[in-house]
Length: 128
Image 1 (cartoon, rainbow, N blue to C red):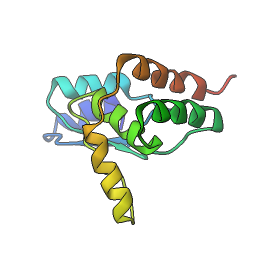
Image 2: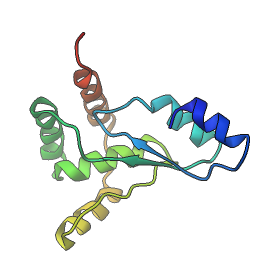
Image 3: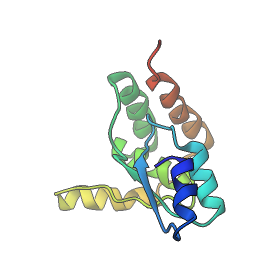
Image 4: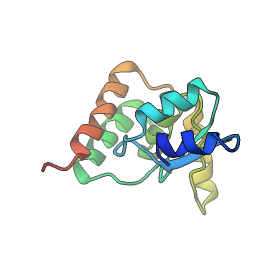
């Protein structure tokens, strides 16, 4: 959904939630998330744990190692700290992964880790 599509939709109904692709590497909805948060509209990132190249995984792995967490926990914690309107629905078929995913809510990322993780999106943009 684009901001224009959401504005059009809001003319005919209340928008109660938006779901688009968004994660550490795919940050195209940064401004949209902020706009939705200002209006109290939840945002559900689709593919919250996907889209990382090996270099990006190295960044994620380094941060996770420093914090004593898994890369998935760090990626989920980053999303949760990104904005209060973000709602996560990471899929898993394993109880162990479910427990790890839930533990991400308790992981507080320090500012230097967030800055390092924010750099992943810049590296994910293909050169033209």
